[in-house]
Length: 296
Image (cartoon, rainbow, N blue to C red; front, side, top):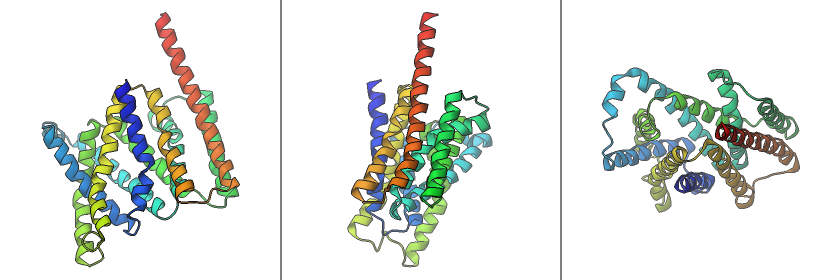
């Protein structure tokens, strides 16, 4: 259990400080960063699979189209999520990107109701309604529709929905997704470099170093998260997931001095209260269920 908590917490801590990494290469266009992220992630995953000698799954997976097809959709949804996040961070919207991952757990619940026919308890419905009220407040009072946050929340929600029903493990699934995106990403990198607008060959030492490192930065937290998720309860994992957006919010406000006026604070507070109610109710229900099973 302790190793699982440590692994999951480490993943969320790394994700929490992601904005600092992307900000350090903010001169590179977001789409080009995305392409490098895909290519170097693919190479890193090949190394991991080779070291673990974990290739036997590939042939049976390729032989069954139903196994691979969901990952075509999840790959492009993930790419859209990454592109939105990188652009948001490097355009001075770190606070709004953090909002997206605060909202995401409640979006996951809503998608479960719509697509998996899951039933919600009254308090869960109340939490979703309160979060929705927070989004509406931010839209009308702050004067700006939080499209970055909602794009991140719903794209990652749909990504999780697809992966929930997929047949491959986290490592295998991510490898398939990166393989699907690899050729287009590599093409654009070569195209940018051939046109003289690429950042890898003409960039400074920091850029030339950090672009390849994006493969490590992407893959390591995902692998830590996968290990942690297998070794701790969903309740613990659900509580830990708020570490990343909290850190992102703090990075945006205290390191990059992004605006966080009272109107935005009120909208965020609605969402934070919704998450608190949702989390506490979930812990209480899980504890009650364990006690009931123990008594039986």
